[in-house]
Amino acid sequence: MTLSDTPDRASARAGAPPQAESRLQPVPFRGGGFRPVRMRFVGPLVFAAILLLWEAGSRSGVISNLVLPAPSEAFEAFRQLVETGQLWRHLGASLQRLVIGWTLGMSLGVAAGLMIGLFSLARAGLMPLVSALFPIPKIALLPLFVIWFGIGEGSKVATILFGSFFPTVIATSAGVDNVDRSLVRMGQSFGLSWWSIVRKIILPGAMPAILSGARISASIAIILLVAAEMIGAEYGVGAYILMAGSLFATDQLLAGVAILSVMGLLVGWLIGRAERWLLRWRS
Amino acid sequence: MDLLLRGVSHRYGDTQVLADIDLAVGEGEIVCIIGPSGCGKSTLLRFIGGLERPDAGEVLLAGEPPAGSLNPLTYVFQDFALLPWRTVEGNVSLVLEDHGLSAARRREIIQDVLERTGLSDFKGALPRQLSGGMKQRVAIARALSVRPAVMLMDEPLSALDSQTRELLMDDLVGLWQRERFTACYVTHNLAEAVRLGHKIVVLSRRPGKIREIVEIDRDLADRQQADAKLEAVQRDLWHLLRDEARAADRELADDTV
Image (tube, rainbow over all chains, first blue to last red; front, side, top):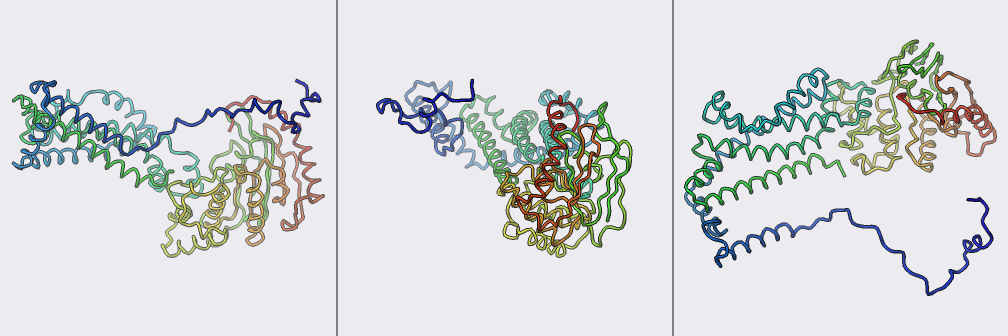
Protein backbone atom coordinates (compact mmCIF):
# COMPACT_ATOMS: atom_id res chain seq x y z
CA MET A 1 0.00 0.00 0.00
CA THR A 2 1.28 3.43 -0.86
CA LEU A 3 0.56 6.54 1.07
CA SER A 4 -0.30 8.69 -1.93
CA ASP A 5 -3.69 8.29 -3.51
CA THR A 6 -4.17 7.93 -7.21
CA PRO A 7 -5.92 11.01 -8.61
CA ASP A 8 -9.25 9.33 -9.38
CA ARG A 9 -9.53 7.80 -5.90
CA ALA A 10 -8.80 11.15 -4.35
CA SER A 11 -11.53 12.82 -6.38
CA ALA A 12 -14.05 10.11 -5.45
CA ARG A 13 -13.36 10.77 -1.81
CA ALA A 14 -13.70 14.49 -2.28
CA GLY A 15 -17.40 14.06 -2.86
CA ALA A 16 -17.84 13.09 -6.49
CA PRO A 17 -21.27 11.49 -6.99
CA PRO A 18 -21.46 7.67 -6.83
CA GLN A 19 -21.28 5.90 -10.13
CA ALA A 20 -24.98 5.36 -10.76
CA GLU A 21 -28.07 6.29 -8.81
CA SER A 22 -29.65 2.92 -9.65
CA ARG A 23 -27.00 1.04 -7.73
CA LEU A 24 -27.78 2.71 -4.42
CA GLN A 25 -28.84 0.24 -1.79
CA PRO A 26 -29.20 0.39 1.97
CA VAL A 27 -26.44 -1.01 4.15
CA PRO A 28 -27.66 -4.42 5.33
CA PHE A 29 -28.48 -4.45 9.06
CA ARG A 30 -26.39 -6.94 10.96
CA GLY A 31 -26.69 -5.80 14.58
CA GLY A 32 -29.28 -6.53 17.22
CA GLY A 33 -30.13 -9.67 19.15
CA PHE A 34 -28.14 -11.30 21.96
CA ARG A 35 -29.94 -9.18 24.49
CA PRO A 36 -32.74 -10.77 26.54
CA VAL A 37 -35.94 -8.74 26.51
CA ARG A 38 -38.32 -8.91 29.43
CA MET A 39 -41.56 -10.70 28.49
CA ARG A 40 -43.97 -10.87 31.37
CA PHE A 41 -46.79 -13.03 30.12
CA VAL A 42 -45.07 -15.78 28.18
CA GLY A 43 -44.06 -17.85 31.21
CA PRO A 44 -47.53 -18.05 32.80
CA LEU A 45 -49.02 -18.63 29.34
CA VAL A 46 -46.85 -21.70 28.76
CA PHE A 47 -47.93 -23.01 32.17
CA ALA A 48 -51.58 -22.45 31.40
CA ALA A 49 -51.31 -24.03 27.97
CA ILE A 50 -49.72 -27.19 29.34
CA LEU A 51 -52.33 -27.48 32.11
CA LEU A 52 -55.16 -26.98 29.62
CA LEU A 53 -53.80 -29.57 27.19
CA TRP A 54 -53.28 -32.00 30.04
CA GLU A 55 -56.81 -31.45 31.36
CA ALA A 56 -58.28 -31.84 27.88
CA GLY A 57 -56.27 -35.02 27.36
CA SER A 58 -57.52 -36.50 30.62
CA ARG A 59 -61.14 -35.62 29.98
CA SER A 60 -61.10 -37.01 26.46
CA GLY A 61 -59.45 -40.21 27.70
CA VAL A 62 -56.24 -39.82 25.70
CA ILE A 63 -54.35 -39.73 29.01
CA SER A 64 -55.42 -42.63 31.22
CA ASN A 65 -56.44 -41.72 34.72
CA LEU A 66 -54.27 -44.51 36.06
CA VAL A 67 -51.17 -43.14 34.44
CA LEU A 68 -51.69 -39.52 35.26
CA PRO A 69 -54.61 -37.92 37.08
CA ALA A 70 -56.10 -34.74 35.61
CA PRO A 71 -54.97 -31.37 37.03
CA SER A 72 -58.51 -30.84 38.29
CA GLU A 73 -58.29 -34.03 40.38
CA ALA A 74 -54.99 -32.94 41.85
CA PHE A 75 -56.58 -29.60 42.62
CA GLU A 76 -59.47 -31.37 44.29
CA ALA A 77 -56.99 -33.27 46.48
CA PHE A 78 -55.39 -29.96 47.34
CA ARG A 79 -58.78 -28.47 48.23
CA GLN A 80 -59.43 -31.32 50.59
CA LEU A 81 -56.06 -30.73 52.16
CA VAL A 82 -57.03 -27.14 52.81
CA GLU A 83 -60.49 -27.99 54.09
CA THR A 84 -59.34 -30.58 56.57
CA GLY A 85 -56.71 -28.16 57.81
CA GLN A 86 -53.98 -30.70 57.13
CA LEU A 87 -52.25 -28.38 54.70
CA TRP A 88 -51.08 -25.98 57.39
CA ARG A 89 -49.82 -28.80 59.55
CA HIS A 90 -47.76 -30.27 56.72
CA LEU A 91 -46.61 -26.93 55.40
CA GLY A 92 -45.86 -25.56 58.86
CA ALA A 93 -43.67 -28.53 59.77
CA SER A 94 -41.84 -28.37 56.44
CA LEU A 95 -41.28 -24.62 56.48
CA GLN A 96 -39.97 -24.73 60.00
CA ARG A 97 -37.37 -27.36 59.08
CA LEU A 98 -36.49 -25.51 55.92
CA VAL A 99 -36.07 -22.12 57.55
CA ILE A 100 -34.03 -23.40 60.51
CA GLY A 101 -31.83 -25.72 58.45
CA TRP A 102 -31.24 -23.30 55.61
CA THR A 103 -30.60 -20.28 57.82
CA LEU A 104 -28.09 -22.20 59.92
CA GLY A 105 -26.45 -23.69 56.85
CA MET A 106 -26.21 -20.30 55.16
CA SER A 107 -24.81 -18.53 58.24
CA LEU A 108 -22.20 -21.20 58.93
CA GLY A 109 -21.42 -21.41 55.22
CA VAL A 110 -20.87 -17.66 54.87
CA ALA A 111 -18.67 -17.70 57.97
CA ALA A 112 -16.60 -20.62 56.69
CA GLY A 113 -16.43 -19.12 53.20
CA LEU A 114 -15.16 -15.83 54.62
CA MET A 115 -12.53 -17.67 56.63
CA ILE A 116 -11.38 -19.54 53.53
CA GLY A 117 -11.34 -16.35 51.53
CA LEU A 118 -9.45 -14.36 54.15
CA PHE A 119 -6.98 -16.75 55.75
CA SER A 120 -4.52 -18.82 53.75
CA LEU A 121 -4.36 -21.39 56.54
CA ALA A 122 -8.13 -21.87 56.50
CA ARG A 123 -8.05 -22.11 52.71
CA ALA A 124 -5.32 -24.74 52.74
CA GLY A 125 -7.01 -26.68 55.52
CA LEU A 126 -10.69 -26.45 54.68
CA MET A 127 -10.94 -26.16 50.92
CA PRO A 128 -9.92 -29.80 50.21
CA LEU A 129 -12.34 -30.92 52.91
CA VAL A 130 -15.15 -28.94 51.33
CA SER A 131 -14.31 -30.32 47.90
CA ALA A 132 -14.36 -33.85 49.31
CA LEU A 133 -17.64 -33.48 51.19
CA PHE A 134 -19.64 -31.31 48.79
CA PRO A 135 -20.34 -34.02 46.17
CA ILE A 136 -21.57 -36.57 48.72
CA PRO A 137 -25.35 -36.77 48.41
CA LYS A 138 -26.50 -35.83 51.87
CA ILE A 139 -29.42 -38.24 51.41
CA ALA A 140 -26.90 -41.08 51.62
CA LEU A 141 -25.85 -39.83 55.03
CA LEU A 142 -29.40 -39.64 56.32
CA PRO A 143 -29.20 -42.89 58.35
CA LEU A 144 -26.04 -41.56 60.00
CA PHE A 145 -27.75 -38.27 60.77
CA VAL A 146 -30.61 -40.21 62.35
CA ILE A 147 -28.12 -41.97 64.61
CA TRP A 148 -26.29 -38.75 65.44
CA PHE A 149 -29.15 -36.29 65.78
CA GLY A 150 -32.13 -38.53 66.55
CA ILE A 151 -35.11 -39.56 64.48
CA GLY A 152 -36.96 -36.31 65.28
CA GLU A 153 -36.35 -32.81 64.01
CA GLY A 154 -32.58 -32.97 64.58
CA SER A 155 -31.71 -35.27 61.72
CA LYS A 156 -33.99 -33.44 59.28
CA VAL A 157 -32.63 -30.01 60.11
CA ALA A 158 -29.08 -31.39 59.99
CA THR A 159 -29.62 -32.82 56.49
CA ILE A 160 -30.81 -29.45 55.19
CA LEU A 161 -28.06 -27.65 57.09
CA PHE A 162 -25.31 -29.75 55.55
CA GLY A 163 -26.91 -29.56 52.12
CA SER A 164 -26.99 -25.77 52.11
CA PHE A 165 -23.67 -25.33 53.92
CA PHE A 166 -21.31 -26.54 51.20
CA PRO A 167 -22.58 -24.59 48.18
CA THR A 168 -22.63 -21.48 50.37
CA VAL A 169 -19.00 -22.01 51.41
CA ILE A 170 -17.93 -22.35 47.81
CA ALA A 171 -19.95 -19.35 46.61
CA THR A 172 -18.77 -17.14 49.47
CA SER A 173 -15.08 -17.96 49.17
CA ALA A 174 -15.22 -17.43 45.42
CA GLY A 175 -17.00 -14.13 46.05
CA VAL A 176 -14.30 -13.00 48.46
CA ASP A 177 -11.63 -13.92 45.92
CA ASN A 178 -13.36 -11.77 43.35
CA VAL A 179 -13.55 -8.62 45.45
CA ASP A 180 -11.57 -5.89 43.72
CA ARG A 181 -8.21 -5.80 45.53
CA SER A 182 -7.74 -2.15 44.66
CA LEU A 183 -10.68 -1.40 46.96
CA VAL A 184 -8.94 -3.30 49.75
CA ARG A 185 -5.74 -1.33 49.12
CA MET A 186 -7.80 1.83 49.25
CA GLY A 187 -9.18 0.80 52.64
CA GLN A 188 -5.68 0.08 53.92
CA SER A 189 -4.34 3.35 52.56
CA PHE A 190 -6.94 5.24 54.59
CA GLY A 191 -6.01 3.31 57.69
CA LEU A 192 -9.25 1.35 58.01
CA SER A 193 -9.12 -1.43 60.58
CA TRP A 194 -8.99 -5.04 59.41
CA TRP A 195 -12.49 -5.64 60.67
CA SER A 196 -13.80 -2.55 58.91
CA ILE A 197 -12.29 -3.72 55.64
CA VAL A 198 -13.94 -7.12 56.01
CA ARG A 199 -17.30 -5.68 56.99
CA LYS A 200 -17.48 -2.69 54.67
CA ILE A 201 -15.49 -3.79 51.64
CA ILE A 202 -15.11 -7.58 51.48
CA LEU A 203 -18.58 -8.61 52.58
CA PRO A 204 -20.59 -6.24 50.35
CA GLY A 205 -18.22 -7.04 47.49
CA ALA A 206 -18.86 -10.75 47.91
CA MET A 207 -22.61 -10.24 48.29
CA PRO A 208 -23.55 -10.91 44.63
CA ALA A 209 -21.79 -14.29 44.80
CA ILE A 210 -23.29 -15.08 48.21
CA LEU A 211 -26.79 -14.40 46.93
CA SER A 212 -26.39 -16.52 43.83
CA GLY A 213 -25.10 -19.22 46.16
CA ALA A 214 -28.24 -18.72 48.26
CA ARG A 215 -30.38 -19.45 45.22
CA ILE A 216 -28.63 -22.78 44.67
CA SER A 217 -28.58 -23.77 48.33
CA ALA A 218 -32.29 -22.96 48.69
CA SER A 219 -33.18 -25.36 45.90
CA ILE A 220 -30.93 -28.02 47.39
CA ALA A 221 -32.59 -27.41 50.77
CA ILE A 222 -36.06 -28.08 49.31
CA ILE A 223 -34.89 -31.28 47.64
CA LEU A 224 -33.32 -32.48 50.87
CA LEU A 225 -36.35 -31.46 52.91
CA VAL A 226 -38.51 -34.00 51.10
CA ALA A 227 -35.87 -36.68 51.34
CA ALA A 228 -35.46 -36.10 55.07
CA GLU A 229 -39.19 -36.12 55.66
CA MET A 230 -39.50 -39.49 54.04
CA ILE A 231 -37.86 -40.99 57.09
CA GLY A 232 -39.87 -40.96 60.28
CA ALA A 233 -41.87 -37.78 59.83
CA GLU A 234 -45.49 -37.58 60.78
CA TYR A 235 -46.11 -34.22 59.19
CA GLY A 236 -44.46 -32.41 56.35
CA VAL A 237 -44.97 -32.09 52.63
CA GLY A 238 -42.49 -34.89 52.04
CA ALA A 239 -44.31 -37.19 54.46
CA TYR A 240 -47.58 -36.37 52.72
CA ILE A 241 -46.12 -37.20 49.30
CA LEU A 242 -44.64 -40.44 50.61
CA MET A 243 -47.95 -41.48 52.12
CA ALA A 244 -49.83 -40.64 48.94
CA GLY A 245 -47.28 -42.59 46.93
CA SER A 246 -47.55 -45.71 49.03
CA LEU A 247 -51.34 -45.60 48.72
CA PHE A 248 -51.09 -44.95 44.98
CA ALA A 249 -53.16 -41.82 45.54
CA THR A 250 -51.63 -40.13 42.53
CA ASP A 251 -53.88 -37.09 42.77
CA GLN A 252 -52.61 -36.37 46.29
CA LEU A 253 -49.08 -37.07 45.17
CA LEU A 254 -49.39 -34.49 42.43
CA ALA A 255 -50.92 -31.98 44.82
CA GLY A 256 -47.92 -32.45 47.12
CA VAL A 257 -45.47 -32.05 44.26
CA ALA A 258 -47.26 -28.88 43.18
CA ILE A 259 -46.90 -27.49 46.71
CA LEU A 260 -43.15 -28.14 46.55
CA SER A 261 -42.91 -26.45 43.21
CA VAL A 262 -44.77 -23.39 44.48
CA MET A 263 -42.48 -23.39 47.50
CA GLY A 264 -39.46 -23.34 45.20
CA LEU A 265 -40.93 -20.51 43.14
CA LEU A 266 -41.69 -18.54 46.27
CA VAL A 267 -38.21 -18.97 47.68
CA GLY A 268 -36.71 -17.97 44.34
CA TRP A 269 -38.91 -14.89 44.26
CA LEU A 270 -37.93 -13.93 47.80
CA ILE A 271 -34.25 -14.25 46.98
CA GLY A 272 -34.85 -12.19 43.85
CA ARG A 273 -36.37 -9.47 46.00
CA ALA A 274 -33.44 -9.67 48.41
CA GLU A 275 -31.03 -9.41 45.47
CA ARG A 276 -32.78 -6.39 44.10
CA TRP A 277 -32.69 -4.69 47.45
CA LEU A 278 -29.17 -5.66 48.54
CA LEU A 279 -27.61 -5.13 45.14
CA ARG A 280 -29.46 -1.98 44.16
CA TRP A 281 -26.09 -0.32 43.73
CA ARG A 282 -25.52 -2.44 40.64
CA SER A 283 -26.72 -1.22 37.31
CA MET B 1 5.20 17.97 57.11
CA ASP B 2 8.11 17.09 54.81
CA LEU B 3 8.76 13.81 53.15
CA LEU B 4 12.22 12.39 52.67
CA LEU B 5 13.37 9.40 50.66
CA ARG B 6 16.85 8.06 51.23
CA GLY B 7 18.49 5.47 49.03
CA VAL B 8 15.31 3.62 48.16
CA SER B 9 15.96 0.52 46.06
CA HIS B 10 13.76 -2.38 45.23
CA ARG B 11 13.69 -5.54 43.17
CA TYR B 12 10.89 -7.87 42.21
CA GLY B 13 12.52 -11.26 41.91
CA ASP B 14 15.45 -10.80 39.55
CA THR B 15 14.41 -7.43 38.15
CA GLN B 16 15.66 -4.34 39.81
CA VAL B 17 12.83 -1.80 39.60
CA LEU B 18 14.17 1.11 41.60
CA ALA B 19 17.76 2.04 42.35
CA ASP B 20 18.94 4.49 44.93
CA ILE B 21 16.21 7.10 44.93
CA ASP B 22 16.82 10.21 47.02
CA LEU B 23 14.02 12.71 47.10
CA ALA B 24 12.60 15.42 49.28
CA VAL B 25 9.06 16.72 49.14
CA GLY B 26 8.61 19.99 50.97
CA GLU B 27 5.44 21.27 52.54
CA GLY B 28 2.97 22.91 50.19
CA GLU B 29 4.78 21.59 47.15
CA ILE B 30 3.53 19.44 44.30
CA VAL B 31 6.21 17.05 43.13
CA CYS B 32 5.46 15.29 39.87
CA ILE B 33 7.16 12.01 39.14
CA ILE B 34 7.36 11.12 35.46
CA GLY B 35 9.09 8.34 33.62
CA PRO B 36 8.56 5.69 30.96
CA SER B 37 6.06 2.96 31.72
CA GLY B 38 7.36 0.26 33.99
CA CYS B 39 9.99 2.51 35.56
CA GLY B 40 8.61 1.90 39.01
CA LYS B 41 6.94 5.24 39.61
CA SER B 42 3.76 3.71 41.03
CA THR B 43 5.87 1.37 43.14
CA LEU B 44 7.70 4.38 44.51
CA LEU B 45 4.38 5.94 45.47
CA ARG B 46 3.35 2.74 47.25
CA PHE B 47 6.54 2.91 49.30
CA ILE B 48 5.82 6.51 50.21
CA GLY B 49 2.31 5.59 51.34
CA GLY B 50 3.45 2.56 53.30
CA LEU B 51 1.52 0.06 51.20
CA GLU B 52 4.73 -1.73 50.29
CA ARG B 53 8.20 -1.92 51.82
CA PRO B 54 11.37 -1.22 49.82
CA ASP B 55 14.24 -3.73 49.95
CA ALA B 56 16.69 -1.01 50.85
CA GLY B 57 16.55 2.61 51.89
CA GLU B 58 14.01 4.45 53.95
CA VAL B 59 11.03 6.72 53.59
CA LEU B 60 10.96 9.31 56.34
CA LEU B 61 8.53 11.90 57.57
CA ALA B 62 9.85 15.12 59.04
CA GLY B 63 7.79 17.19 61.42
CA GLU B 64 4.33 16.78 62.81
CA PRO B 65 1.26 16.26 60.63
CA PRO B 66 -1.15 19.22 60.64
CA ALA B 67 -3.53 19.38 63.56
CA GLY B 68 -6.57 17.19 63.07
CA SER B 69 -5.02 15.11 60.30
CA LEU B 70 -6.65 11.69 60.39
CA ASN B 71 -4.53 10.09 57.70
CA PRO B 72 -1.32 12.01 56.95
CA LEU B 73 -0.46 10.06 53.79
CA THR B 74 -3.54 9.83 51.61
CA TYR B 75 -3.91 8.33 48.16
CA VAL B 76 -5.89 9.34 45.13
CA PHE B 77 -6.02 6.35 42.83
CA GLN B 78 -6.10 6.13 39.06
CA ASP B 79 -9.17 3.89 39.11
CA PHE B 80 -10.90 6.08 41.75
CA ALA B 81 -11.39 3.07 44.10
CA LEU B 82 -14.89 4.10 45.15
CA LEU B 83 -17.13 1.52 46.78
CA PRO B 84 -19.89 0.95 44.21
CA TRP B 85 -22.43 0.15 46.94
CA ARG B 86 -21.98 3.42 48.75
CA THR B 87 -23.26 6.82 47.72
CA VAL B 88 -20.96 9.80 47.28
CA GLU B 89 -21.64 10.72 50.89
CA GLY B 90 -21.13 7.14 52.04
CA ASN B 91 -17.82 6.84 50.24
CA VAL B 92 -16.47 9.88 52.05
CA SER B 93 -18.00 8.68 55.29
CA LEU B 94 -16.19 5.34 54.97
CA VAL B 95 -12.78 6.82 55.69
CA LEU B 96 -14.06 8.81 58.67
CA GLU B 97 -15.87 5.98 60.40
CA ASP B 98 -12.84 4.40 62.03
CA HIS B 99 -11.71 7.54 63.82
CA GLY B 100 -14.22 7.74 66.62
CA LEU B 101 -15.81 10.94 65.37
CA SER B 102 -19.38 11.71 66.36
CA ALA B 103 -21.99 11.29 63.65
CA ALA B 104 -22.64 15.04 63.68
CA ARG B 105 -18.95 15.85 63.26
CA ARG B 106 -18.73 13.35 60.40
CA ARG B 107 -21.69 14.93 58.65
CA GLU B 108 -20.08 18.32 59.08
CA ILE B 109 -16.80 17.20 57.52
CA ILE B 110 -18.60 15.46 54.65
CA GLN B 111 -20.69 18.50 53.91
CA ASP B 112 -17.62 20.70 54.00
CA VAL B 113 -15.51 18.63 51.58
CA LEU B 114 -18.39 18.07 49.21
CA GLU B 115 -18.90 21.82 49.09
CA ARG B 116 -15.22 22.43 48.47
CA THR B 117 -15.21 20.03 45.54
CA GLY B 118 -18.55 21.12 44.12
CA LEU B 119 -20.29 17.83 44.83
CA SER B 120 -23.01 18.91 47.24
CA ASP B 121 -25.77 18.24 44.72
CA PHE B 122 -24.53 14.70 44.14
CA LYS B 123 -24.21 13.44 47.68
CA GLY B 124 -26.91 10.81 47.27
CA ALA B 125 -25.66 9.51 43.90
CA LEU B 126 -24.09 6.08 43.43
CA PRO B 127 -20.73 5.80 41.67
CA ARG B 128 -22.28 4.12 38.65
CA GLN B 129 -24.37 7.22 38.03
CA LEU B 130 -21.32 9.48 37.90
CA SER B 131 -18.99 10.29 35.03
CA GLY B 132 -15.30 9.50 35.39
CA GLY B 133 -14.50 13.10 36.22
CA MET B 134 -17.11 13.22 38.96
CA LYS B 135 -15.87 9.94 40.37
CA GLN B 136 -12.36 11.31 40.65
CA ARG B 137 -13.76 14.47 42.29
CA VAL B 138 -15.41 12.22 44.87
CA ALA B 139 -12.09 10.46 45.43
CA ILE B 140 -10.41 13.83 45.89
CA ALA B 141 -13.13 14.92 48.31
CA ARG B 142 -12.61 11.69 50.21
CA ALA B 143 -8.87 12.34 50.37
CA LEU B 144 -9.42 15.90 51.61
CA SER B 145 -11.82 14.76 54.31
CA VAL B 146 -9.05 13.11 56.32
CA ARG B 147 -6.92 16.29 56.19
CA PRO B 148 -3.85 14.73 54.62
CA ALA B 149 -0.38 16.10 55.14
CA VAL B 150 0.71 14.68 51.78
CA MET B 151 -1.58 13.59 48.95
CA LEU B 152 -0.22 10.67 46.97
CA MET B 153 -1.75 10.86 43.53
CA ASP B 154 -1.21 7.84 41.31
CA GLU B 155 -2.00 8.94 37.76
CA PRO B 156 -5.25 10.47 38.99
CA LEU B 157 -6.30 11.78 35.59
CA SER B 158 -5.14 8.94 33.36
CA ALA B 159 -8.50 7.17 33.26
CA LEU B 160 -10.26 10.32 32.07
CA ASP B 161 -10.81 11.74 28.62
CA SER B 162 -8.73 14.77 27.68
CA GLN B 163 -11.49 17.35 28.17
CA THR B 164 -12.35 16.08 31.63
CA ARG B 165 -8.65 16.01 32.39
CA GLU B 166 -8.38 19.72 31.59
CA LEU B 167 -11.34 20.50 33.85
CA LEU B 168 -9.93 18.49 36.72
CA MET B 169 -6.51 20.05 36.33
CA ASP B 170 -8.15 23.46 36.70
CA ASP B 171 -9.93 22.14 39.79
CA LEU B 172 -6.67 20.89 41.27
CA VAL B 173 -4.95 24.20 40.59
CA GLY B 174 -7.85 26.03 42.26
CA LEU B 175 -7.73 23.65 45.17
CA TRP B 176 -4.01 24.10 45.61
CA GLN B 177 -4.40 27.87 45.57
CA ARG B 178 -6.82 27.63 48.45
CA GLU B 179 -5.34 24.85 50.50
CA ARG B 180 -1.63 24.69 49.55
CA PHE B 181 -1.67 20.95 49.89
CA THR B 182 1.47 18.88 49.54
CA ALA B 183 1.38 16.23 46.86
CA CYS B 184 3.37 13.54 45.18
CA TYR B 185 1.88 13.27 41.73
CA VAL B 186 2.78 10.31 39.54
CA THR B 187 1.92 10.69 35.89
CA HIS B 188 3.10 9.77 32.44
CA ASN B 189 1.49 12.85 30.97
CA LEU B 190 4.06 15.60 30.52
CA ALA B 191 1.44 18.32 30.10
CA GLU B 192 0.01 17.45 33.51
CA ALA B 193 3.47 17.52 35.03
CA VAL B 194 4.37 20.99 33.73
CA ARG B 195 0.94 22.32 34.62
CA LEU B 196 0.84 21.07 38.21
CA GLY B 197 4.39 20.40 39.32
CA HIS B 198 6.59 22.70 41.29
CA LYS B 199 9.25 20.07 40.92
CA ILE B 200 9.33 17.43 38.21
CA VAL B 201 11.29 14.30 38.93
CA VAL B 202 12.31 12.43 35.81
CA LEU B 203 12.91 8.73 36.35
CA SER B 204 14.90 6.58 33.97
CA ARG B 205 13.85 3.27 32.55
CA ARG B 206 14.08 0.15 34.70
CA PRO B 207 15.84 0.15 37.08
CA GLY B 208 14.33 3.52 37.89
CA LYS B 209 16.86 6.14 38.89
CA ILE B 210 16.41 9.86 39.16
CA ARG B 211 17.75 11.34 35.93
CA GLU B 212 16.91 14.90 36.57
CA ILE B 213 14.82 17.12 38.78
CA VAL B 214 13.32 20.09 36.96
CA GLU B 215 12.00 22.96 39.01
CA ILE B 216 9.37 25.30 37.63
CA ASP B 217 8.99 28.41 39.71
CA ARG B 218 6.05 29.92 37.86
CA ASP B 219 2.95 30.13 40.03
CA LEU B 220 0.37 27.44 39.26
CA ALA B 221 -2.33 30.03 38.58
CA ASP B 222 -0.18 31.73 35.92
CA ARG B 223 0.43 28.60 33.94
CA GLN B 224 -1.78 29.08 30.95
CA GLN B 225 -2.04 26.77 28.01
CA ALA B 226 0.32 27.66 25.17
CA ASP B 227 2.80 29.24 27.54
CA ALA B 228 6.09 29.36 25.63
CA LYS B 229 8.28 28.69 28.62
CA LEU B 230 6.24 25.76 29.83
CA GLU B 231 6.16 24.33 26.36
CA ALA B 232 9.92 24.57 26.24
CA VAL B 233 10.12 22.69 29.53
CA GLN B 234 7.73 20.08 28.22
CA ARG B 235 9.82 19.70 25.07
CA ASP B 236 12.95 19.27 27.13
CA LEU B 237 11.26 16.64 29.27
CA TRP B 238 10.11 14.76 26.20
CA HIS B 239 13.64 14.96 24.88
CA LEU B 240 14.89 13.38 28.08
CA LEU B 241 12.28 10.68 27.98
CA ARG B 242 11.87 9.81 24.34
CA ASP B 243 14.62 7.28 23.89
CA GLU B 244 13.85 5.68 27.22
CA ALA B 245 10.18 5.52 26.41
CA ARG B 246 10.94 3.88 23.08
CA ALA B 247 13.22 1.33 24.70
CA ALA B 248 10.66 0.67 27.45
CA ASP B 249 8.00 0.20 24.81
CA ARG B 250 10.02 -2.54 23.17
CA GLU B 251 10.68 -4.40 26.39
CA LEU B 252 9.01 -7.72 27.03
CA ALA B 253 6.58 -7.44 29.85
CA ASP B 254 7.08 -9.75 32.77
CA ASP B 255 6.01 -9.78 36.36
CA THR B 256 6.91 -6.23 37.24
CA VAL B 257 4.10 -4.16 38.53
